[in-house]
Figure 1 (cartoon, rainbow, N blue to C red):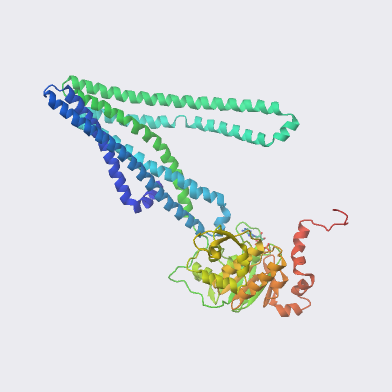
Figure 2: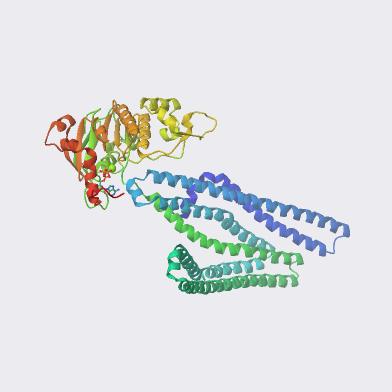
Length: 609
Ligand code: ATP
Ligand code: MG
């Protein structure tokens, strides 16, 4: 898809406006040409001897009025075309922005890991802004100037074919020469900008290091270096400016040549008695009209090239396809209702470019309503398990079934409606409490939210956290207010409420590893118990209390399940890892590796303060 392709896609829905704009542009150009005809009439009438005195002054008056009307109408139309051109450009680029944003939101995790948010912002906004800029310029200026050029040439032809021909030859030559001149000096300007940039970065760095520079007494050295840089700037700028001026002079010379040709032919025709003095004026005025479009067309050619690059980048972004392919809607299976059975069979997964497997032949089975507690040190693959379940990534081998259905045959929307993932990092939005809980879903009403919060035992807690700052001022409901600052554990409480509102058949909870205060911990426990009632659950546990809720336990190590069984049985088996874990305490076990990796050693003596 190139610039023309993008133009046609985003201009098509606005064809009415585009047509109106074209008509207005043509009218404006028509008026500009007519305006000069009036002047010609003026001159010829004033000089004409064949009329009586009073007839002459009446026609002059009429001419003056027509001239004024066309002049004002031209201004009005100019305003309208500018407005319409901008409107069309904004509407289409906003549509393009929306499409790109949606596209990026739909792209999967591998894409988002490769592209930082800042880069995407630049591509969604920067490139599109450049395109939009050109779009408005393109419509209003390129098209307008092109029309004007053609209009003037037609008008000249209609005066006299010889003058028309002469000026057409001139315009073609001038366009060719101007586009050559345009390319001159580009390199010099780049060098000048480079010199500026070097100067600024030097200044920034030295100003930041003021303290060090002064303490080292290096001011004189800095000034000498600055002098060098400013001299470079001057040299580069002088060169670029000189070339620019030369091209300006050449452009001016070209225009003067146009005048000379036009005037020469005009005078020759006038002397031969073929045209009037008014027509001669008209020809010269038309040639003056040519200068502006010639110049701006030359400049637009350059922005067209820039837009070419921007539209290529936009097209490349559009061409990004998610690696995780959605099941085709016509063949998509549906998940059963109620609590879902979960079946991992030989699931193996490696992140792109990773040296080792993140999941290595993982098999787990959960009956509907069963809760498995997943334990493992940091980096053992627990979160990865939830990501492949949620199809943020597809495993390289193995099958995942929900309620007996392969997740790859289910539509993403169905899958994500029936599973809820409560991650370690909960994203809160700068929005009201209700929007944060219902995730902007307007079909969930306040009563449902209140019921959910009460069911989880969180109603009073949320109430206490509402900041007295209503997002929607005319509705006094607490839910329309914003939330105050939230800790990681508190974020999880809200995420549980979100999950409850979705009413899923499977809840996957990746517990925050942050330490919780006892009050929050108790509330979290209660809320988790209530959320899990009647649902299948996978809980990645970082606390002993959460593990107690599980029916079975899976212990991960380096992506493998190294122990898997009923919790009761494992707890009573003196040789099981789980049993040992319960003895040493989960925190110690989880901390063990990271503490030794960080080289933390207990303090040898206690007299440090
Ligand atoms: P934690 O307890 O700290 O949350 P975890 O068990 O959830 O750890 P995972 O996030 O599943 O660990 O990571 C498993 C392994 O995969 C780790 O070695 C990690 O470095 C690697 N890994 C995780 N995410 C990515 C990624 N996006 N790209 C490449 N490697 C990754
Ligand atoms: Mg994790």
